[in-house]
Image (cartoon, rainbow, N blue to C red; front, side, top):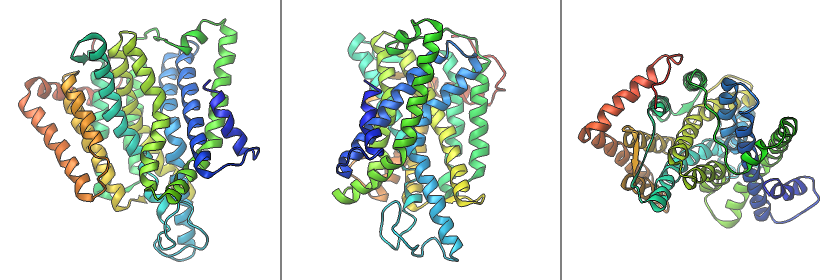
Length: 419
């Protein structure tokens, strides 16, 4: 089924089917979602056939590959767009001949840059505001227990997430993403993978389709896994650019803010597999594994995905240069970092309660319908103030945050504590 939903996008890309741009965009989005499922399942099965350290690095990369599909398309287009303007001896605010590749008015040729981080901020906020919250709420409905508690081993992941979040605050202050982000966030990601690789090996917990594939004979299992990866990666390469362009065109034709479509519709497709896998863990009475999976995904997105954007932009620009952010991008990155700080403060005691989950979900949903700058900064201030209040008033969270900082700064080769 996951492979079948990709077929219409392949036929459209091949020119066999011709339909309206809105339907095309929807089908391309469904193809990205189907490919994300295949990649996720294949990565889980691959843990049986490759070394632990390679499996961890591979899983981390695969986890953010669907997000790359949209974010890096816009980063590339932004680099090309700015290079054309610079080559013509113009500033980026001067009209560039030809239609703007990311929509917008003729006098605003920086539309691609304005969209480059939209998918990243949406995916990160969706993961916490919906993903983390839903795991706890489903567990409460299923078991009656009012919280999900993580093991001490997850402390290090939370520490790396905190380091990445604190660095993310420098992005809106600088007003750009650059190679310094690649160095810092890339280092955090490498340390995270290194630490995980030196952790005690555990047998992967497989459920659903990965479990069925794992039951095949070794050679057949490897062939199936390889074909899944090859097919899914091919579909994402085929669908990424038309899906991104379709979101912009659909927004303009329907009078919907294209920034919102890129920020929320694309992540809904790419984040669906991770969220569904987390929910399946909860339904199998493994809520810790479900929440832990989403925490790991947040670390991957906040480090590897953000670090790659300035690389793609520079390659397309034909020079190592920072990608300047517009006002909307600065606000969105600041809000995303503020939400992350709040989530870390809440989870510093390694537990997420029903009330805290509801607060994460409500504050996420409350942001919709308000596009004013003051509202975005208002939510940002609320998240930071709430995080400080939690750390100051709750001794367990305060001591937990200290332990989280120490875990994040510990040498990556140091063994994790048990539990």
